[in-house]
Image (cartoon, rainbow, N blue to C red; front, side, top):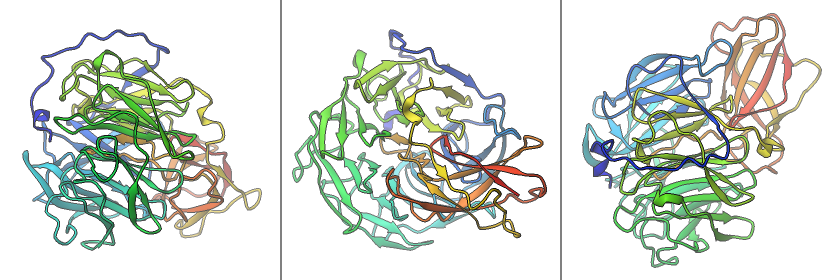
Length: 486
């Protein structure tokens, strides 16, 4: 529970040493949003979908559009579009659907400022700019701030907060029961899609069925059943709030799980074992908080004082040496607590950061070898490809089109996944950048050895035909080779 999230925390600060390994840069957007922004979601047409947060009208979502050169730093805002009149959530689940035309938002720890663990949901249609309510699974009362995820086979899976139940979305107002988890309750637990297509769950309550306070679970998507995972070396949830930090899959498949206590653990899915990660220095924790995979292979996380306290510090986890190192902070640190942060990798490889304020910044990580062998690769059918006459359902094929990680993690309250292809189209004469809306990829797998896959994309309305265009596929902020299109 996050009652303290509604209280001002800026009056308490924490002195933190810098100790920066690399002086990376944070840059504020040239055009800041018209309201406070929290959850940020990457739409499949290149735009960012951004939720208005607690100091404003939380029915509202805004659009952030990169400029004509593809720059997000110089992008512009439009909107808002309002959710149904009965729905104004804080701390909810959200996913961009594989059809490229819908965003599903479910639950919320709060609705209209009241703590309700609501089971209300809403479906947004991009092409018509409309919202409609979406009914919860039959018999459910408390979706709340429980996690959601899209599996490698494309199914959307939702957990209920206060029970063991899960359910698969099966179209508007329709659900199919999923397998029960093994914990006493799903509340505050975290999920991650692994490269082997299983779902990793880190429990936030003692699980007597699976190693008690060290419990993890694994979903077998073929049988839709949960089984006990390997035990962690250290407990990650705190005993009072039962919070967790982010769970992020790295390029090589190892998975960093960050605690609401000053510990981290690292999961090796090949060996099916956990090992201790580095402790978080200074007594700081991820008491709910974001993490994101950088293009250099490091994981950027946000930590602060315990119990939703301020004093935030950005840190980078390096897989090889198994280390955590301070990096530079955005302007609102150290007054921010970790739970207000949202991190998401952009198609440019920059990291977007929002914190329930009207100041958004972009982080530019240091270059590094992480991108090697993890970029999408697209395949040519000839020296020049051709757009379809209608502009819709263009097909591009290649490898790693979804990337090899969900990209983003956060306790349980936010999903900003970027494990799907984006198509950037550049006019080679003018330099103008366009975005094709992607949809219906042949698989949602992030297995680097999944083999060839395809995605379709539609040209934007008014797209000017004529000169040659370069087309690239981007996944997780990494751009493929380009193909020439007419």
